Every structure is written in structure tokens, then in C-alpha cells.
Image (cartoon, rainbow, N blue to C red; front, side, top):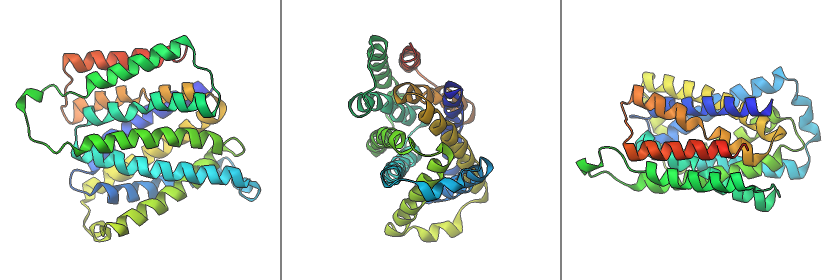
Length: 286
């Protein structure tokens, strides 16, 4: 069943990227992160009471709580980087870099969680790495548009923190029900997001959010919540080195919808890169 949850996580994560992109056309990405996190927090705590895991709060071990907090901090940092990158760059360029966190996660899982690295996984790492490089280029690069390339640094930051999130989260939910673990992590993300809003002096922007974008931000939060609940259930029961690659297949959902919604197209080179990422991901399951 954990594989089913992993694929569910991929589907909802793919929707999250598109919905979030629709919600940050005019709205500051940090402000949008705060709103999304509030939605995720409500959603995750509702699920805690639905599965009746709230009683475990009183028996959480210090080590578990520590790793959940660290995972939440890594998640917050990843989100802030990711949605800033989405705001500055194209979905088809940002998402592949973010999904390359798979490679780092597998290496960290091998080092810290002592999960095995087989030949198929090594092949998968190579294919995902090459595929990501191929996908960074956009089809209409010949237009030579003078855009700010700072999105690339934010996208790389998102991938690094996403990898740390997976490893820390895996350790943090070993002794706790996954929905409760997700809810606790979300509190940390919300606090971190609010701190960033006030540090950057963007709290006034909350009063002037476009109603249409607010709708998409909230829906994005629901998709994120659903993705998280599936992801951490899969991570709790399965191998991090397998769950993470499946989750990253959300790139297929994202690119499909980005083509429909934003009319972003892939070049032949990017399509080859996408094929490499997909084949590499499936090789992880062998």
C-alpha cells in the first residue's frame, strides 16, 4: 500500500506546482507560502482527528520531536526557495531542478539510513541527473530573453532542502503516526514562514491579495496537504530511496498541466531529458 500512497503523493504534488504558479502571478511568493501553510495546517490537523492519533502527542519522544522540527525547518526553507523560483522562472525549468533532489536523497539515505544502493538505483541516479541537465534549457532559448536567472539559485536551494526534509522526516516519523507527524511539521513551517514575512516587511501585502490568486493559493494548499499525507504515510512504511523517486514523478503531472494552463512547451532535448528522468525513476523500483 505504501507504493500507492507514494503515487498519490506524486499526483497531488504535481497539481500543487501548477496551482501555486497561478496564485503567485502578482502575489509575493513568501506571502503566498504563509497562506498555503495555514491551509495545509488546518487540513493536516483535521486528518489527525479523523484517524484519532491526537492522543500520541503526550507520548512523543524528544528525538522524534527534534527531527520533526528540523524536517519542518528544511521544508520551510525548501518551500520559500521553490515558490520564489516558480515566481521568477518557468515551471518547466524550475520543477526538474527541484525534482533532482531525488539523487541527493538517495545518497543521504545510503549514508544515514543505511539503505542499499543497487545497480538499478545507480543507473537511475545517472539517468535522472542527465535528464535534469537536459531539461534546464527552454525551447525558445533562441529568443535570448533577458530574464533574471536568480530563479536557478532558488531552485537549487529548493532541491537541497527538499532532500534534507525527506531524510529528517523519515527519522522523525519512525515513532509516531504519519498524519500527526505531518501536522507537527506544518506548525514549524508556518512559524518559519511568518518570521520570513515580518523580517522582509511584507505583512502589508496580505491585505492586498487578488481574490482569484487567493483562491488558487488555497487550493494549492489543499493539494499540498493531500500530497504530504500520502508522502509521509509512504515514507513511514516504505524505503526513502524508493518513495522519493516515485514522488518526483509529479513532474509528469506538472508538465502536462503547464502545457495546458501556461502553454509552456518542451524542446526535443527537454523531452529526452524528461524521458531520462522517468526511466531513471522507474529503475529505482527494481
